[in-house]
Amino acid sequence: MRAIKILSTLGVVLLALSALSAVGLAQEMENLPQASDLARQSLRPYWHVFAAYTIAIVLIGGWAVSIARRLRAVEERLLD
Amino acid sequence: MLTLLGLAGLIFLFYLSFFWVSTEIRQGIAQRIFYVHVPAAWTAFLAFGISALCSGVYLWLRDDRLDRAAMAAAEGGLVFATIMLTTGPLWGKIAWGTYWTWEPRLTLTLLLWFIYLGYFMVRSSTEDPEKGKRFAAVVAIVGALDIPFIHLSVIWFRSLHPEPVVVKPEGPSLPGDMLTTLFTGLAVFTVLFLGLFLFRYALEGLRAEADLRARRSAA
Image (cartoon, rainbow over all chains, first blue to last red; front, side):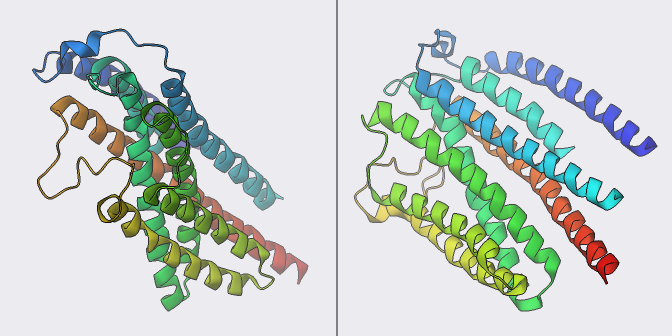
């Protein structure tokens, strides 16, 4: 139980750090010479691009949720 | 931990893809599909490769842990192959004017997807579970044999699909920022897959334990 709490806290801290470092790194990367001005142009509403990224999130998230549900069911079976 | 790291990486990848990387001059914004399509393809091939490797060793050693690892990897491979097979046509509609065409790489990739779908059908439809595991292991190995053909199909045959831009003898031909975003995508999808694969493997271990307990209490 204590290990789970420690791991959860560590996970949250790492996630926050990752997010902060991601933003910082991205800001640094904007100054690199290979980042062209084209990157600053606005996104045209190509629904295909957004659909592609949504599909990726939904499928990976769906797999994670499906594993979590099955894990809970097996843990309940083991407790019974 | 790996899964959390992968999640953070995914947010970073989306930031790079939408706000940082340059827009490709000919394909425009649609080229950004590349940063999820290629990592999904790489991860699917990695997963199917792990599944085939574990299946091969399972057929040799008959260790159930290898069968569980093969199944966990195959399930992940199927998820990432589905991402590859759905994001590719979305790009194809803009680049080629059609969602699907029966050209060699697309056809072989769809075949791979069906082979691994068959992997799960073989497992669940065989009455003797041990026989089912062996049959499925053979299907996993046969499926993985398709992967080199998928990679080389664009070189061997006349194909609509773009040729490799990274894995080629003369080195990558992508600009630096596109290469950075692509490699970030490859790392993020690999970490996400490995994290979820470990959970899936643990699930099969617990399921086997629950089955064993149920058999013992029934006896």
